[in-house]
Amino acid sequence: MTTETVLRPAAEQQYAAELAALAAADDRPRPPRWRMSPQAVVTYVLGGTLPDGTVITPKYVGSRRLVEVAVGTLVTDRALLLVGVPGTAKSWLSEHLAAAVSGDSTLVVQGTAGTSEESVRYGWNYARLISEGPSEAALVPSPVLRAMQTGAVARVEELSRMPAEVQDSFITILSEKALPVPELNLHVQAVPGFTVIATANDRDRGVNQMSSALARRFNTVVLPPPATEDDEVRIVTARAAQLGRSLQLPTEPPALDEVRRVVRIFRELRNGSTVDGRTQLKKPSGSLSTAEAISVIAGGMAQAGHFGDGSLGADELASGLLGAVVKDRVSDSAVWQEYLEAVIKERVEWRDLYRACQDLDTSGYTVSGA
Image 1 (cartoon, rainbow, N blue to C red):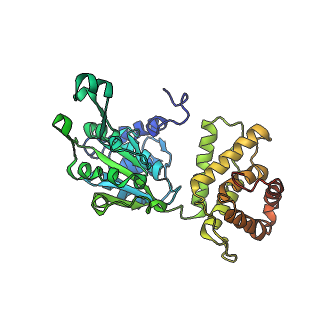
Image 2: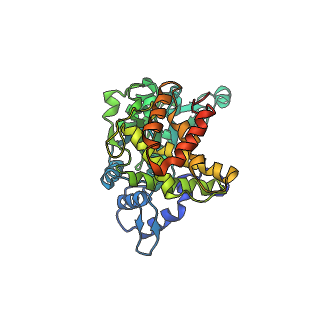
Image 3: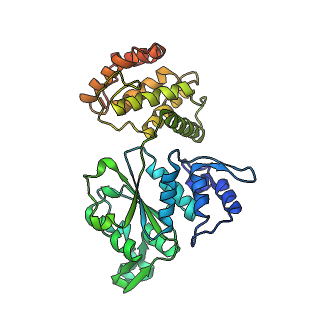
């Protein structure tokens, strides 16, 4: 399948030309089974220009040092754990690191409360198991086992959401770089190039706390929210425009002023104060992450393209903002109303947004899920 025939291409598909150009221009030493050197991986993630003029687009906006530490970890025998609040691009960075290192970002285990040990280790084709008995042909390898056999990067999403006993099945894999299959009297050993990138949500630390034995097997890199408003505006603008193209939305790219309004609202509510520090605000129950800001802009673009004049404005933003902020029917409605009256109303240049939000208020739209 091509990038034109799927809704969301994998990183190695979407950026195949950039990956190929980087690999061709890369003359530095490469670790075993890596598609390019660690320096080239950093360039792929953060962007740059190659000697032949090829422009590598930034995939992550943030500290270069953090990315270098993450890539350096993958060269060692320790796994990488990316930790941060929701919307700090943990999964996004994980996917692009896997694509650059091993050319395959699809070896993924999704952590949930229902994730079983089979998802980490292996399962069985029960029809063959019943008819033939235990055999290698009846074994169904997990993404982690396939990564061990091919020397690739395995990704584990939301590690802390997995039950503790499932998390601990990684201990032998990460410490011994091996996976026993007692039913077949096998001991599968990982080939060079194998490693694991896991992600965990700061807010989920109390869901299933990692054991100290497992935590020692990871080098942890904490991904902070975008440091400045300008950084966050750049991220939201680029991703929203990319979404608009992939979804073929009949609308113009979002205006910078509209993106900045959404980003400022999110940052002020997240921080509990206005940008000038003069007004203290109550914080909503939701995270109001960068990813949610992208969704608000993309949703507004869809409304503008299909039901408006194709230009994103206050009317299209209002409904998305309310849906993002008001998650709890009681407490968040009060938070939003206070922000609407104390901040948005007082900004002359935001009066159009105030009126649009008030119009939705009168229709009872502010109650999320009502």
